[in-house]
Amino acid sequence: MGFIHKWWAQTRLLLWKNFRIAIRNKVLSLLQIFSPILFILSLFVFQEAIIKTDQTGLYDVVTQGPPIQLSSIPICVKNRNLDGCLTFAYAPDNSDAVRDIVDRIRLNNNPPIAEDSVRGFGTAEDIDAFLFNNPNFTQGAYVFSVQTGNNSRMQ
Image (cartoon, rainbow, N blue to C red; front, side, top):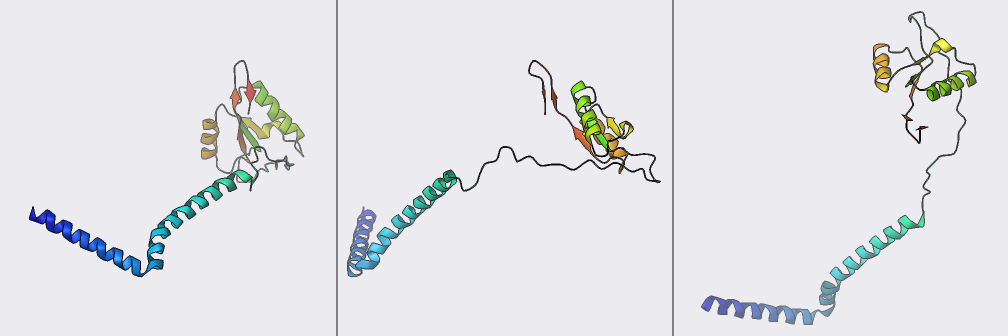
């Protein structure tokens, strides 16, 4: 019991001493009390400012960019070191819609792309395998995404 009594007496004396020091220097005491409150208040104000800034539209969300005119696809020129070359490769080649689009690309190019410079592949993996086994053989390749069903569409 003596330990608790001694501890309580020391704690009371220490609190009384701190109180007397705080009364002597009122400005410092008020600063110690209000500085954490001001700091937390400033964090809250900054958070609110950030939230308001995000909603005021400092930047425009663009879901679709403006249309740009693309230049023609360059024609692949056969090099004496190569057996041949492809101007354009595409996949999948089992869709009539894809073949129609590729034919339009081929014919609307300036100059038109020859039919033997365009090759279709079954899947994207087939194109990858061909390009890996035949480096510097193809100008470019495009993989179409075809969805079949009632609402069939192409991307």
